[in-house]
Image (tube, rainbow, N blue to C red; front, side):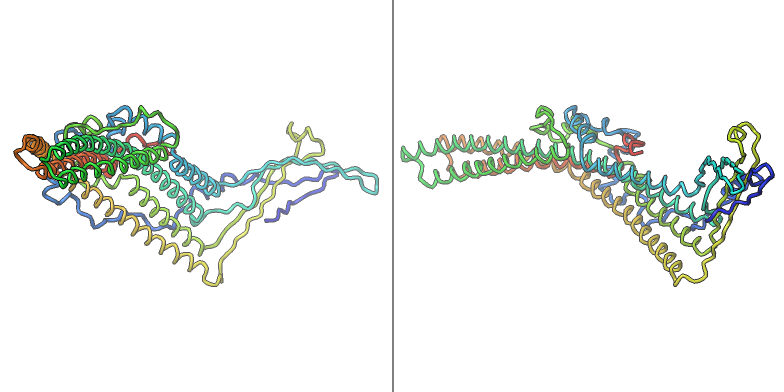
Length: 495
């Protein structure tokens, strides 16, 4: 807007404008009276069951109710992780992981964008001091000094457009903040799983090396018996099969161990000492897991999912879309802008600051009413409403996905103990079978094929047990994560 000051020339060669004060009180009243045209937000009633409905899952929940009165989201990750080495590795990852840094930078960007948008709710106040000295053809010298304060082109938010836009940016910022929390929780789980995968693959490597050593001994015995004419070449060839199979596994597991280290280094984002790594899983089938991670009680209500960071992020996106509808609706109404200044003028500069100056003012309001825009406002409103429906569906899907993740984790938890017990017993039985059949073979009572088959069964059973131990630990990590675990520690960090 163009500022048109009203000037008056006095006999003392002082040019100034007389005025009333600037209108800060009136502007404040207008600001306080702003209202939003956004639809009232109501949390969606998603079509997800309120309880975990499966019998096996319910039994698992009952079995863990006495463990703790806390839920997963109340347990900081440092209380959940019990191994000091793993805790140190996770700490390093939280401070150095590049992907997490990128996410946190997005949060800071969203916060700055919100602050930029919010600034439209307030006028830009400027202060100026100017002087003018003019000599006329008559020889007169006219001097004028002015000190002014005012704002220009300030839009009075009568229909809440700027307030709705500010609210939309605030919700976007909150969504990014929740996304950062979810990223931290996810990173904790990824690092822990990578650490455990390295331990499991190292276990498998040790098992393959042990099996190759035992197979080599059996192969040497068979070769000696062949030289005595007791065994045939088929027995030697059979002994060689498990030996070379174990050697092949050794090469494969060595590769996997190195790749596991590389994956862990990438997640951590910086170098760390190898002493922080694990090269074996707990020896016993179930209780040993407690030395690494806590067994978290699941609780019985699915309401806990509503405070998961990823679900809250989706809800904030929905609220942002809701606020954008208010801004689109407000665009149909008139826009009122105001330019105003006020200050003091004097022929002597010192008079401005000593009270000897005269007051000046200028005010220039304007109003703009949309009449024809080619359907732009209607299209913007339709777009905002469609976006709101999109984010509503995304929010409901986030809740459904969260429910499915928890149900899947609980379903695995309900059966993993039985599987571990069975595989423990299988390893014990197959080991006894191998030892007995090998002794019978060495004493000439049984054929080498029986001992060979027992050795293969034992090797396979031990491999399965290691894999299942890892799966049990991974299941604990997964259940902790999908129930919002770690939130107590990450709360307030992404600000």
